[in-house]
Image (tube, rainbow, N blue to C red; front, side, top):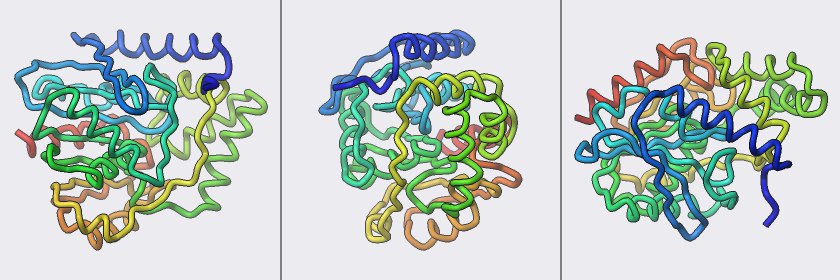
Length: 287
């Protein structure tokens, strides 16, 4: 199988930034390598093992250290398992799964079984939200509740807006390497500027084969069958998955929807203060 990293040098640069971010977190952690039907999955585990388990799932073009940084205090209250999603610019296997079948759901449940945990909380951002919903569709018996932030798979935004404001600047950066195009991309996607995101995504866009497959939306019958409590955080100004539209559909198709929050002035990626609010909600509602 050909690597998703375009060059060995590019892979080294991306993983160097991964290690840099992990070191900046200044936490005690261990690497776990889990075998699955789809290849090895790298997990960063942190927090006291006797605490309640929570699995963090990052978004597209991300990695586990970014997920931990997003909610930096969870390890004080939970045993945190931050997963490197397969086929993303990180340390897990490069096996690209289909978003149309149950592969992601099977994969996450294999991880849960391998970790020998039950009553686990899942928290995911963007593409991580799709993965979590797929896990609930496949087998929700060991999942206590879930928290979804700007999740994929519930609704999609206006395709023309997404094309012109997000994908064209991304493609122009890949072609020209001019910083103004990645700045355009970031200004549409991020609520506040993130210097690490500039560095990391600049490398990822140039050196990693990203998946541009259209994101599906969950069938209402599948949504109706989920019984696990769902808490949903949606961005008011999210172009990819518009918040008001998302909440409206979620309230229709998820009978287990426990709580929704429309985050004012939030684009797709929340600000630090907005993530603090999400983190506080997770801690207060789950313990």
